[in-house]
Every structure is written in structure tokens, then in C-alpha cells.
Image (tube, rainbow, N blue to C red):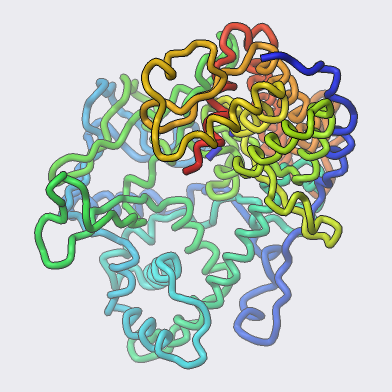
Length: 580
């Protein structure tokens, strides 16, 4: 991720609002148009995929017991204070539970490097099901389609191991996987998704579209490879969409990414004289039995108000050591408590899309709101907040905004042809909106300040200022001893920049969070008939958390806050200009 003298603040007029408000929050959803080829087989698209929560079914306990036994035989160590189960059976998903108190720092899981790595290399080299030969035959075919990606290789292995668990070391793991994919909005029927569109963030709708297209593209490749697989000399059964979607989502929701040092060509340890890695690092996505049973726990929002509900953060953290990767307790874990991990500092949208849930409460350290603004919106705002500029300062301000990336060098040309440039922004609950604030600082600073910033950048021709110039407290802008631009705006410019960002956020909030109102008090009358209660409550948690992102962010933009700590606006301006 993730974002002097003064002109009058009243310059912030409805010109900006007029430029921002017309952005539509409705987008068409992606639907598969199946032709007569492979894509037409196996069902009628995403609407066929009935999403269901992971539920305990007959034989699951036996499957888990076999999985644990196999994993331990493969050198994985699991604490005898931990078991597999649900903290609230029938309500919460299966995970790891503490059977006895676990002390902070105590080892919970240890994964030696000798454990089998179930990654794409393992899948591509498979000879049990003949995947290696099938992939080679596909890739050598003159009619081949897309590439066999790591996800395609792994998905094929998982699907085959689920069909024939007795044939492969991967079998106990495949047999213990949930029977259904996570209840992701990717698999919502079209009618249900259409009903939810007015309440969903634009960014999530776009991500659903992209995920669906990716799924169908990968399925095309996977079905073509599966057509070349033979089991006991007989062609493997066709790979339907439901089966591929299940295997694909097992990877997306359960794979762990390890970063492995790539060996340098010609041998050696891959390090240069300065100790730097010459060969680079490979990111490998691996299916890690038992480790992937742990559920996710979000990190709490920093400096959150005292009485609000909050997350405790993950109960274990990963520790890489010589010969093993270990998960140790970050705090005391009491008997009966879930042993949680983190899937990353992910947004609610990412958690719902790839893992099938929106956490409760929805506000946590990973919360982010994404939105786009057309360049014309910012240009309209500039025409208001800097309308008193002289010709010289107007040119300087335009040049700086182009340098920052906010404006295109074509000076807005091409918008009449429907090719308007849009800028992507993220507002994170745990960070100040630095990109927006940097742009606003350039737009709202005084003429004297914008000309000083322009001069500082122009005067820097490969040399730096001396220490006396750097320590000049009256300098608006200078290049420090390390060659980085530093900016010092006056309090009024900081205030105007902060209020301008707040104004933009006020205009964007309804589009990013969906319509506001008293619907929390009347959910039964507001909820569309096509939407089930679980999806509706997930949507509400998503919207409530997004609104909280705006509330917390706007606090940092208030006048009294900027008086106490407005220097971050200066840093934001310098940051978007230090691009070389």
C-alpha cells in the first residue's frame, strides 16, 4: 500500500464537489460467456458455485487424526498442549485450540526444513498422477493456451489427491481439507451480487470481477492439462468448474508464502563481499499441513479509543531459524483459547474475497479504503484553491503536480475522447493520508512557498546544500545533506491542505462506503430479499469499518491536531516530490 502566507480558505468552493460527486458507484459485474470450447463445460458460471461455510462432517475427525499422524511422521512438531477443533462448535470454524495454558514465547509448531515442501515444483514434478508428463505435453502443444502457473499446478495436484488420497503422500492432507470453498463473494449468484452492489465498495466490486476472470482463465488451462492426465492408463475425469474452484480457493486461502534464497549461478553462498544477496530471493507458495489449520486474528487499531471492541492480535508469530521455521506464542494462551496466526495485515475486502469472512469487529489495523479520482477532479479543485496565483506561480504549481504524478504531462488532454486519467488512492486506518496530503499541500500552499519549492528542486544539480543552509529555520524548501528535498510550510498552508483533504474525503465517503442512513436500525426492511443474513451482516461490518477509517483519518486533519502536529503535511509534500 496505502496515502508562508495564505490564500483564503474560502477558495475551497463547490467547484471541487461538482468535479467529484458525479463518479458512479455502480459497475457491471463480470459474467462468463461460455462458448463451445472447454469453458462451456462443468456448469453455468459462478452462479453454480454455492458457497458454504466450512462445516464438520462425518469422518472429519478421523481425517484430521490421519493428517496429524502423517505430518508428525514428516518431522513436523506440534505442541502437546494443542488440539484441532472449534472454539464454538457450529459457530466458529475449525482451528487449533489450546488444551492447556501456553506461556509467552513457548513453541507451538515447528516445521523443519526436512519436511516435504508441497509447492508448485513438487506438483509439476509429480509422477504418481503423471502431472509432469501432462504439463510437458500441454506446453509443447501448438494449440496451447495460457501458461501453467504455480496455482494451476498446485490446484491440479490437490484435485487429483482429493480424488485418489490413497495414492499420494499428499492424500492425508487433501482428505482433511474443508469440503467447500470459503463463502467468498466471488461465488455469489448474480442475483445476490446485483442486490448487494449499492452497498459494496467500488474497489471490492472491481476485485470480484478480476478474481472471477482470473478463475476462468486458470480453469481453461487446468482443464487442458487434465485432459492429458492418465491414472492407471485411463484418462482422468474432466475437471469441472466446481472442482477447480474448490482446489483454487484452497490454495488462495491456505497457502503460506516462504521467501527462499536463490542460489547464485556457479555455486557459492550467493553473497557478495558486502554480504548482499547476489542471486535474489524466490517467493514460494506452499501448502503447509497443520499450519494452515490456524485461523486469522487481526491486529488492533493503534491508539483506538478505550471502550471500543478490539482485536487482540495473533496468538503466535513466525520465527525463522537455522533448519526450521517455528511458530511461538506472542502472549499467554489460556486453555480453551484459539491459537490464532495472521494471514497478513489484510483489508476486510481481501479477507472476505479470499478467506470468506469479515472479522468482528470490522475495525482493525489492516482496514483500508480504496478509491479513484479522475484527474479532472483535482484540476477542478486546483482552480478553486489556487485561483489567485500569478502566471509564474501557476506554472510552478502545475510543474510540481506533474512531477508528483498527480497531473499528467498532457495537461488534461484526451479527456474529451473518453480517456480520462484516474488516480488510485488508499486511506489506511493506521496511517495518515500522506499521498493525498502531499498533493493537497502543493495545491494549497502559498505562492511564495510553491516558488521556493520549485527553486530548491531546480537548484539541485547533483550537489547538496551545506550544513548552514540546511539549518536555516526560515528556509521553506531545501535539499539536505543526503540529497533529499525537505519542505517547511507555514501553519496556514498546513491547515488549508488538511481541510482540503477532509473535504475530498467527505465527497468520496458515500461512494467508498455505500449509502448512509439509519439502515443499522432497520436491517430487516433494508436487506434485499436475494441476500442472506450472513452476507448482509458481512456487508454491514465492511461498511461500518470503512466509515470508521474516514472518522479516524479526519481526526488527523482537524485544525487543532494540525497545530500540534502538522509537520507530517510537510513530509508528505516532500515525499511525493522525492521521486528520483
